[in-house]
Length: 276
Length: 356
Image (cartoon, rainbow over all chains, first blue to last red; front, side):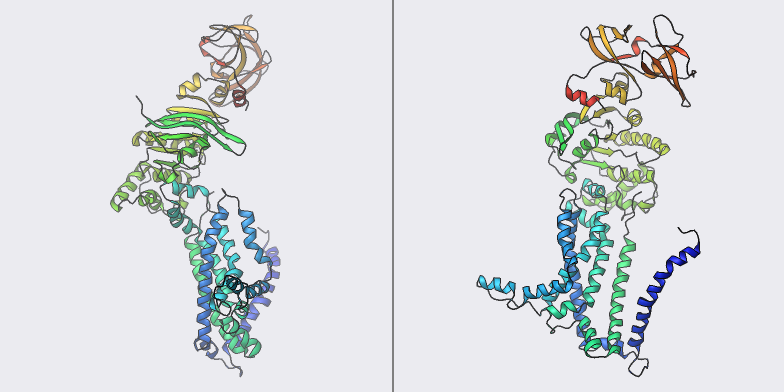
């Protein structure tokens, strides 16, 4: 694209500098802290810490809640995106706005709004009381955290899935119908496999923030339910043990890398080749 | 006697304010190769999609083998479609694509296997079972699309401009391939194209459409030699279409000159369209009682020359194996049996159909 290698290098420089200073150096710092103790001696203790209670419990809970939220997002996003890509009913603008709108608002604000909805004297319980129904305990439960995660991260599932589904040629779906497939058979045999890259991308984009969040669990978990994000935050801010915090972060990164590897696998094995 | 397989009765379809099909009646017979031909926007693809079940007509019925299938979804219809851009399943290999319909209808492995072999042999792609469909050439993809459709043994195969994405040489090859497959399988082919050459060379019958109306139905020879109106004459091949007046049976007046013809049955002094094919015109020496003109333009096409002769203020298109010089004075003559007389459009609708 560029005539000379020199011009290329020139354009690359700002990015390389940026990546070096703000990605590579901090990563090295984290690894340094994660692998050493206060006496600056190398030790794996900060990593194995993740497998001791209560840290292990927090890690398992985080993975569990992140997985559940990701699956719920996926289940909500598929029907939504299928409706959005169905050009016969032109709802796309209205519906997509409705789901993208939360992205424009501060996530802290959104989560606090859910706090007032779910809390003991919150909107849900007040409505229940009006109908003389018993209260439900929602705030400070895993359910509350999942609701918060799904609400915050759903757009990140919708967007890649929508892109992936809208790339599927309408005639391919018609071809499946023409060959005798019912709508459900068409979904399972054609639409789902062709949209897997989008679904995999969306799952990563939901799973990673859900795994690392500490705001949602702090506000909707009430400090009773500790996620790994909260533990790390405490190590850095309250406990002043940067080594432990960095070690736990590194363990978390391993899970994120596994997740990304799975995504890349799906991306490659089912990549939709564009027709000319 | 040919057996009817599909009948469209009064089928009409509009998209918003745009009428795409206007009260179409059409009967399609078993085993025939029928082509829906017309310029883009004439409604031919919509008609095919109505037969396939992808569009619902606003009114009218689709009868298949005596049964009303107007409201059946595509997966319940005994027809299969070959789409313009192949629409193969890119996440499946060749044999998975071909087996798709058979697996849906729950056929057993052995049957599916034999069908795949049969279909690949029919389209000359034996040995391609495991190939990735996205790595095949356009012509190969199109043949897989045909194989994928015919293994389901449809009574009728719908083909939506299947050759338009292929290059010229391949297109010519595929034409005879399609005709061969039509003869070998006995499946009725309903073929949509805007390419008149394709239609003429492949079809048993051609349905010429324009602006939602059927203009003429006939064999390739009929629509070429005896076009029913100026649109058909102009759309199929090249034509000289001249305003004329029918003086009496077998005599027509064009450019103020009376000329013998073979058509009868028009009222005296009736305005008509007169069609003369460019290859039927003979250029000669100007005489007293001929149409005389001057050569305006000559284009060499390899096999023949296209010569434009201006006479009586009209540009005659003449095709000849002999070239002429621009500026040369010539006479334009033609035999009575090469003149085709056509009625002028009667209604506004017909007029709309004609003004393209």
